Image 1 (tube, helix red, strand yellow):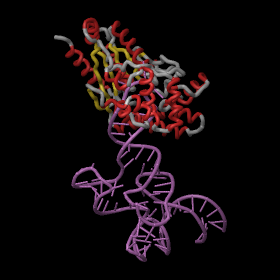
Image 2 (cartoon, rainbow, N blue to C red; image 1 turned 135 degrees about the horizontal axis):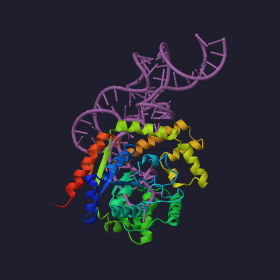
Image 3 (cartoon, rainbow, N blue to C red; image 1 turned 180 degrees about the vertical axis):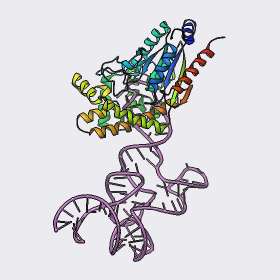
Image 4 (cartoon, chains in turn red, green; image 1 turned 120 degrees about the vertical axis):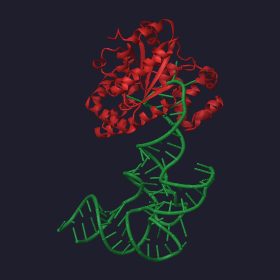
Length: 331
RNA sequence: GGACAGGUGGCUGAGCGGUCAAAAGCAGCAGACUGUAAAUCUGCCGGCCCAUGCGGUCUACGGAGGUUCGAAUCCUCCCCUGUCCA
């Protein structure tokens, strides 16, 4: 069935001589991106490439909304479960890994379907990152210590001296971004704004199709609320205590993520289960909102109103994609 | 039935004669984002108007009266809520 799909041969042909198509599904959590990705993968000989910053971690399944293996319908999923929870993973790491996957998919003539929710990861893959130094834990620790001693705006005054242009674009209270900017200036011995201005290397060899899911907010909220309750019923607390038991410390990075933080608090009895659920629902709604703010700025997105698990929307999406690929073919 | 305590903006909660459309937090809305991004940070947040000024106006601190130049703040009555005593 897959082999007889007209598109699959098309994708293969294209991959030899021209840019390969690449499909990116964007939208807020609980909008049905995974379901849509799966449906479209079946129609196009596609494979899923995750761009979610929590789903890359092993052992973090329920709370991150990872599609269980038995529900993947045999479709390969990449960059899921690729890092241990006690390891840091950054946008730069993501970009390298994803490029590797993309190369492999192209060789096999498979359509990469990007599914996830981390806007920065998607952008760092598609548009690239500036060519700067990676993070330095030692430097950052020192900067944080100085900030703690000298007050909330200290780092900003430091950055003004190193790179006034960059300082003007970062709020004095945004310690996280200030630290990165200072770190880059110090390590590269050049202002970060200068490095930004030199551009970044975007993804080459692919023709990108961006499909945005824009569900009605009221219904999205209902889905989020339900999904969080299901996570707790499905064993989120057990998943967290398992991770905690295995790594003995609570410094696991994914535990800072939405949902996991509240689950930890519930396990510590700082929060009742009901309260943890409530807070997670609220935080998830806020996250969905932030995602929409980010994705609205994305260029060249074709937006579909509704949810990705809706067969009708799936049909239209596949249709849109096929047309797009065909019209992109050279005459 | 009696004794206290209390009723403040969507919620929690400060204010206890003017500088109060009312602190603060939450929620909500809008936004930013180049290696922590499910992170981090910002703005707005009663209505209307002028047109953005520490501008005008209307409605607001349980209800109705009153005191006062002036009341969320004081007084009276009433209605609710909580705790305790019967």
